[in-house]
Image (cartoon, rainbow, N blue to C red; front, side, top):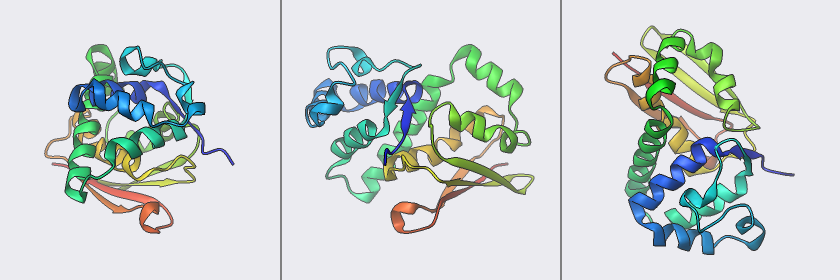
Length: 194
């Protein structure tokens, strides 16, 4: 069974950040470690491996690149990597007009109603639910996501720090409470803000 696909929008921004963060040699080494069938999906001679924002890519491509990029990192280093990658990816995606439109159209109250549409802009499998726990906290639940990867999951949950800030929330914190990588039935995080 296929693991699903990811759209190039966030994927490309992550790759550009990774080349800046770890060096173009590290990105090239991650490309070189890919199976040949996945290498044909991208172009190592172009920035961001030539990933196009509007094109769908096999999620296994991202899994393989992340496995190489994160090999040998401690748990603390993995958390730091995920935090930096989430911040850079979201800030690159939410520039200028996109950020203004997002902040005008999406609020913490409206976010639970639009989250699946937003999720579908990046992934072709999975279902997301945002449960309002209080006026300043939400629980996010991801189920049926065939493309799950522990690092992508961490980055997705940590990106909420920046998504909620873009909605005007202050002092945002995110706690990852469950993950299928740890044997849980779904992935969950709790977001709190002031």
